[in-house]
Length: 140
Image 1 (cartoon, rainbow, N blue to C red):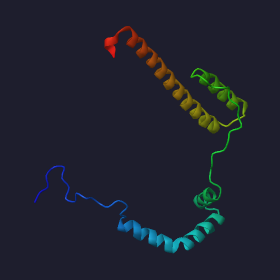
Image 2: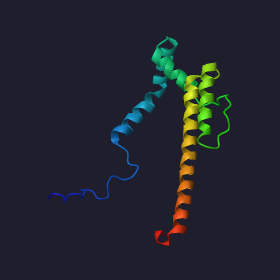
Image 3: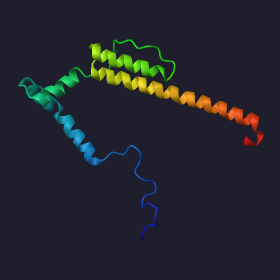
Image 4: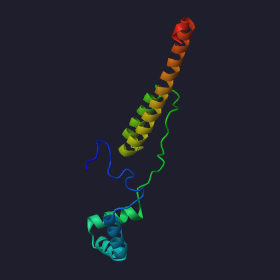
């Protein structure tokens, strides 16, 4: 018997949270060998293996966000973001912040400026709609 287009042979579908047998088997094997694998990784790292060293260091000291000690001018409008971006660029030029930190701070400034621009456009649109509603009642 053929199924109609859009009709499943199992309408209930796979139960939510059901796990694949291969995944379960792989996890079980890894759990059983975890101690040995960890010791091997540490041994390779001690021997200077670069990938093993990287894995161990990432686990011991993961990169975390940290505050950037850098002052920005106050931002209340989207135009203020231009001055803030100028400060970031000057900070990089002066060596106060790294290019990576500058990129992260710039992304925050850009998101803030976008939020301000959206709010400003919404406010302007509300004013225009209110003005149109007062001048032509049929626009309601």
